[in-house]
Length: 95
Image (cartoon, rainbow, N blue to C red; front, side, top):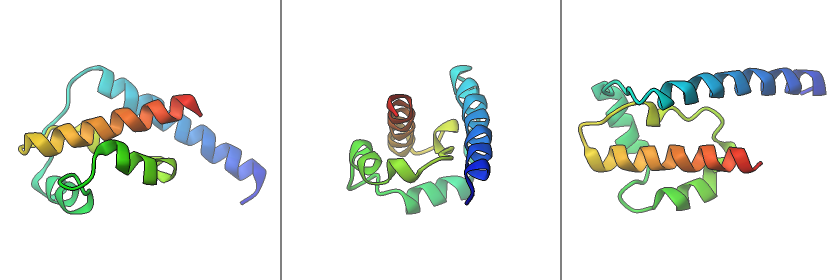
Protein backbone atom coordinates (compact mmCIF):
# COMPACT_ATOMS: atom_id res chain seq x y z
CA UNK A 1 0.00 0.00 0.00
CA UNK A 2 1.35 3.40 -0.90
CA UNK A 3 1.91 6.08 1.71
CA UNK A 4 -0.84 8.22 0.18
CA UNK A 5 -3.36 5.36 0.32
CA UNK A 6 -2.35 4.56 3.91
CA UNK A 7 -2.79 8.22 4.90
CA UNK A 8 -6.21 8.32 3.24
CA UNK A 9 -7.28 5.13 4.99
CA UNK A 10 -6.03 6.49 8.33
CA UNK A 11 -8.08 9.68 7.83
CA UNK A 12 -11.22 7.71 6.99
CA UNK A 13 -10.70 5.40 9.97
CA UNK A 14 -10.20 8.40 12.24
CA UNK A 15 -13.45 9.98 11.04
CA UNK A 16 -15.34 6.72 11.55
CA UNK A 17 -13.92 6.33 15.06
CA UNK A 18 -14.91 9.88 15.99
CA UNK A 19 -18.50 9.26 14.88
CA UNK A 20 -18.59 5.90 16.70
CA UNK A 21 -17.27 7.43 19.92
CA UNK A 22 -19.79 10.29 19.69
CA UNK A 23 -22.63 7.76 19.45
CA UNK A 24 -21.27 5.93 22.49
CA UNK A 25 -21.00 9.20 24.41
CA UNK A 26 -24.74 9.75 23.88
CA UNK A 27 -25.26 6.71 26.10
CA UNK A 28 -28.01 5.29 23.90
CA UNK A 29 -27.19 1.78 22.80
CA UNK A 30 -29.75 -0.21 20.81
CA UNK A 31 -30.30 -3.85 21.64
CA UNK A 32 -28.15 -6.21 19.61
CA UNK A 33 -30.09 -8.39 17.23
CA UNK A 34 -29.92 -12.14 17.96
CA UNK A 35 -27.39 -12.75 15.16
CA UNK A 36 -24.95 -10.13 16.49
CA UNK A 37 -25.29 -11.48 20.02
CA UNK A 38 -24.69 -15.05 18.81
CA UNK A 39 -21.58 -13.92 16.89
CA UNK A 40 -20.24 -12.05 19.92
CA UNK A 41 -20.86 -15.06 22.14
CA UNK A 42 -19.11 -17.39 19.69
CA UNK A 43 -16.22 -15.19 18.52
CA UNK A 44 -14.99 -13.60 21.74
CA UNK A 45 -13.47 -15.68 24.58
CA UNK A 46 -15.43 -13.76 27.22
CA UNK A 47 -15.84 -16.80 29.48
CA UNK A 48 -12.14 -17.69 29.61
CA UNK A 49 -10.18 -14.48 28.98
CA UNK A 50 -10.40 -11.00 30.43
CA UNK A 51 -10.98 -8.02 28.15
CA UNK A 52 -7.50 -6.79 29.10
CA UNK A 53 -5.90 -10.07 28.00
CA UNK A 54 -7.81 -10.04 24.73
CA UNK A 55 -6.92 -6.39 24.05
CA UNK A 56 -3.25 -7.10 24.78
CA UNK A 57 -3.19 -9.88 22.19
CA UNK A 58 -5.39 -8.44 19.44
CA UNK A 59 -6.03 -4.78 20.19
CA UNK A 60 -3.47 -3.34 17.80
CA UNK A 61 -5.19 -5.08 14.88
CA UNK A 62 -8.76 -4.11 15.84
CA UNK A 63 -9.42 -0.89 13.96
CA UNK A 64 -13.21 -1.09 13.68
CA UNK A 65 -14.60 -2.60 16.87
CA UNK A 66 -18.38 -2.01 17.17
CA UNK A 67 -19.63 -4.66 19.57
CA UNK A 68 -19.67 -2.14 22.41
CA UNK A 69 -22.27 -0.01 20.60
CA UNK A 70 -25.11 -2.34 21.62
CA UNK A 71 -26.79 -3.77 24.68
CA UNK A 72 -27.05 -7.52 25.07
CA UNK A 73 -29.56 -9.81 26.72
CA UNK A 74 -26.62 -11.57 28.36
CA UNK A 75 -25.45 -8.86 30.77
CA UNK A 76 -22.08 -10.52 31.43
CA UNK A 77 -21.29 -10.69 27.72
CA UNK A 78 -22.37 -7.06 27.29
CA UNK A 79 -20.19 -5.88 30.16
CA UNK A 80 -17.18 -7.78 28.74
CA UNK A 81 -17.70 -6.25 25.29
CA UNK A 82 -18.08 -2.71 26.69
CA UNK A 83 -14.92 -3.09 28.77
CA UNK A 84 -13.04 -4.32 25.71
CA UNK A 85 -14.23 -1.27 23.79
CA UNK A 86 -13.08 1.03 26.60
CA UNK A 87 -9.66 -0.62 26.58
CA UNK A 88 -9.33 -0.35 22.80
CA UNK A 89 -10.18 3.36 22.86
CA UNK A 90 -7.69 3.96 25.69
CA UNK A 91 -5.02 2.08 23.72
CA UNK A 92 -5.64 4.25 20.63
CA UNK A 93 -5.39 7.46 22.66
CA UNK A 94 -1.96 6.37 23.94
CA UNK A 95 -0.63 5.61 20.44
